[in-house]
Length: 118
Image (cartoon, rainbow, N blue to C red; front, top):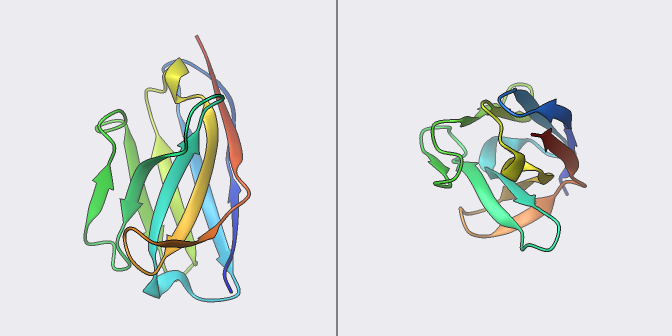
């Protein structure tokens, strides 16, 4: 079992930055792909960014490309999402997930709210 806990969400003005963290316990994250998802009110959950177990390959949704950066520190069992130039449409609950592959997400965190005011 892997337990994931997100932190770093909050209220920020448009154009600002936030850094989300996802700390894992129960098992090392080094063998898992990691992803950040978000879900806005009335919308489906969407993949924002993902990173392979080694960190050698990353993917970003077009909507965040150039503004968000996903990274991982396997020694700290933590994954990060640096979010810059935030827009009101980035407002959502952000979830991290761990997966045995890049498309199968086995474990989820409880989510952290990000609210961007315009």
